[in-house]
Length: 278
Image (cartoon, rainbow, N blue to C red; front, side):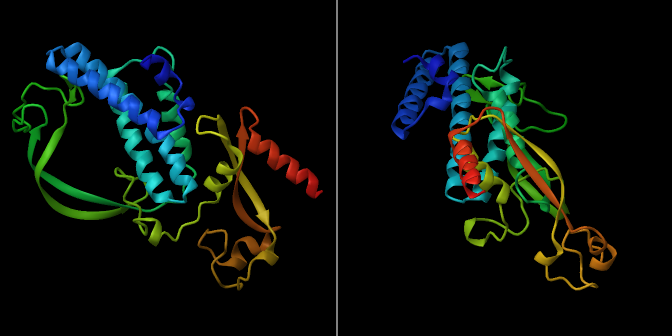
């Protein structure tokens, strides 16, 4: 199996059978290196497995978009982001041979399309922390010698929290843990709307299509809103309607244009449909 060629072209993977075969192959190579006590090769195969998992998770995000499981996609984007930061510590990319830089860039772009603005931030005091490699206690004054984030015989060193103490919860707009979105925990209790993601999915053919956004303000006609003069303005400014957009040409609203680097089949079809309506 030419694993290098496969990892360099993740956009060509199509079926679950293919990905299962590759996962089995990577696992077998890692286990073989560990059995031979060959740490350089064990770390190599562990890193390639991490790269492949990040690629597959990125593809899964779009599958979740298709099934309208937006919060689950949001959580998966965060996990990929964390995993890729770990990969960057282990491997210096000459170019973007495994599309990991691309994925990291587009994670940020996708996250910007979500409507989430308010998050919960839990505060804990870590009381007992152990090294994930040797299981030794880790304290401010005591270190076992293993470096967090490094690979040892194919296993990444992490600090495992064995015991902690909950201190409190804060409401923030810039979260440390992005999964802690206020007001949603799954598809069944999701009251948010995702028009930008829905539009993106209507114009791209594949997760590795290249695109960017341009954000600006537009005015929507006043007649589209049933708002009293003394009620909050629909633009979201928290001002009264009479003191905000009522004096403007319309309701000032955020608007996003999607700019594709190369036309896609879906975008061409959408353009033809718009032309036929005129």
